[in-house]
Image 1 (tube, one colour):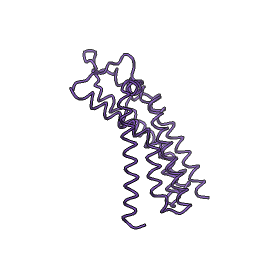
Image 2 (cartoon, helix red, strand yellow):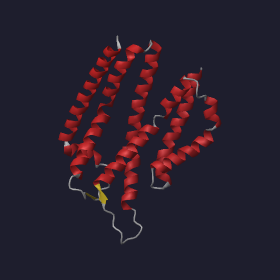
Image 3 (cartoon, rainbow, N blue to C red):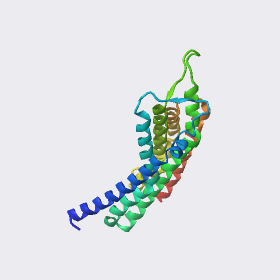
Image 4 (cartoon, rainbow, N blue to C red):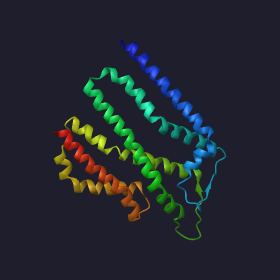
Length: 230
């Protein structure tokens, strides 16, 4: 295939990706009640959200519909991109790429699920009810609630990519299991710092809910790197 043939193939894949994403976004947008029932589910029942911008609810609706559609269609989007690059890879390279991409998608979903079901509810409960004085009432905007949910979900999803990253580094010879074992204590400190940043509540229970899974991922990464080094 010539350069222009590759460009035409890429354009076809991108058009399919765009079409599927737009259809999914429209469907999510149309099911507004269901969409925001899911988004607002972690919110404490006694926490009242407000809107202070005349167009903000509509813009938030559009943004959430698009991002949820992107999350739901991510496997298809990745499959389309893989279908484009796969013909240019050797069989072993295709196998490695498929494992990395598939594992990365699953781990990202796992991080998002952990945040949605366990970490974010505690975080929003703490921050939503925290007061420096009884005279200062909390009026939480819808935008700030959605932004916090999206940012924390994205951060946890990215953090959960640790095993895939370590596996890829081990594959190219840049990471050894001895290095990860030797600096395990340093890694624990970094994990606690990351956990403290992701969960600004400050309570030990929520911090452990974030740090413990990340530490288990680190130990899993050591096992993966050891297996890759054989």
